[in-house]
Length: 382
Image (cartoon, rainbow, N blue to C red; front, side, top):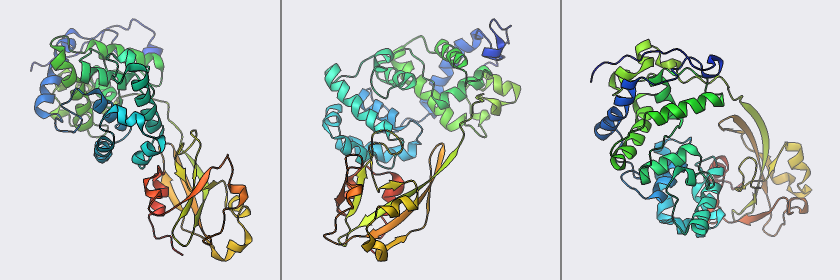
């Protein structure tokens, strides 16, 4: 593979918007990049994952939604369980949301599961059970954004369309020496344009799926966020960041999401037979649509709703810290022993807080937040 140096050309646009990246791509890069990625993927990429080597849009779509902000090793078991329970999009569409959330429980980002269910229903109702064949049409479905739509269209229908997930952004900004701040939408659009220009142009039924997978594999296994393995990279000689000796500089994104913290109190109401009281949360906000122990903003708020005859069977449990993407939750569970025939206080039984008692054999099948499932899996008998 001949060594090629990227020539920096004079900027044709406002540099405050587009940074220092070249406004036009080097012809050698356009000519050689896609071919190198395709060849590398065939011999060194990931080729044995369960959602690969298929053109079935249902299976590809399911994997793409699950893989959003989630590692492959985590997705594998969930993917297998979903396909076992819902082997076709019609099966998923016919299921209840509770059943879908139950299978998804623990995977996080639960809006994905709700959108997954809605999308399957729309595919059945609006498209006669067949997924649209273009990225533009796919984006009209719930939960499918531009990059996910492009992945499905590329893998299943060989459409010449670019993806731009986190791994691919890292690969392309390094290869291009693209220093535009991706926190600015104009720069992200410019990167999309460059990504499109680098796509294969020949034998698309074969090259598009492999090229798209190759970019994902490069970002996941070689062109990693920390300590990239540049000496193993098939496009090293085309890479502007490698030539400059600064791959860690890319991608550039200045807007940082601030972390926050929130303290919540949980009521673990339990009967002698092990049944627990669970509420179904509203579809918006944290843990939307899931079943959960009743949540309160403070211990005092929780205690105020309990009847006096519980006080001798009412005690705190160790605090649980649950880390979300942008927030740390400090959860303070209180276990309360209810008598076999004792009712939940009327103040906690309303349309605003729909709840019910669930037996030890029933609650494991519900959609539960990961920390609540872990908590209930402990021996709750007191």
